[in-house]
Image 1: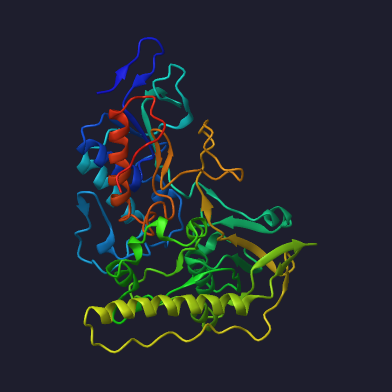
Image 2 (image 1 turned 90 degrees about the vertical axis):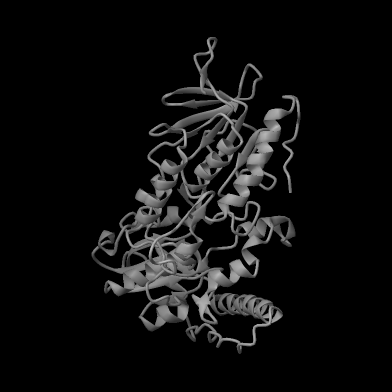
Length: 429
């Protein structure tokens, strides 16, 4: 039960969970199971970003049968399909209702700092303050677009959109070629959609992860789940920080389970060029390393498929290996520059996004502004959820929240039971 402290007019609770998306609600379920008094604060509605922060045609990259949270899972008629964004929002809202999460909606967190009274932390909102002994940062990894510095050099008459502001091809300037920057899942999907609408599209391609949609008759996500690839722990990665920066795979959720890659886009008329290296005098400049980038993505894909085939053979699978995708076709001489304005009327930045912790007033950041944490443990009594490869490769997926929430939630419970002077948050492995 929440308690109002007489001295500060703040409500007191054991744990404040910030964010009512899938990760925050998964943690709420875990805390409730331990009998921990907590609230879930959300600046909008449940699953707000799934309702308002994506383009109209977006679907999950994972099949429906993988969509599950602690004590709740998809039970609809199309387990091998891919949910639309609105369906994901409805799924998460149904979970919040089923779990009776203690929600405080339409409430914006404005400040999180150490409590002056030494009891833990003080969470300030536009609807009053909270005092607590632990805080869960579950506001997501995609609060603000990550734009390259050269975005500031784009001429003012060229339209700029991000994956958070683009909704449909009709949003684009009426004239000119469309430059899509970024060739991970979002960039490929948007380049494909815009091209199908009849527009000329150029896709600037940097580092990417190429995957087939299906392998040996099953969804590629089935293979990575079954073979344990998605359960790889961050401490087993050769380079943890690099592993957390790996782009999302080039996949699309569609009724036909099609593979969407650079070859398919080129067949439909999308021009591919190298990574955007800069903008000079109103001209976009592209790297000349397109062929090498594509060759590296092809090599990594083949290595992963070798791993999956080896796992299948180790289980006694006698089926012959599936046919592999051909190497990515690359133009003989991809262009190295493109005039903005004269030829390009719109740029869509598909260059990723980052969490926004500007309200976190604690010394928990790296010099470059990234949140500093050890497998989700930020500080004594503060944990983060939902970030890429937080504890496992699947950490940022909906179904990946369960294991992380259970482990980090158990650590919070232990923290609450120990002396307030403890300097570390112990977590079970």
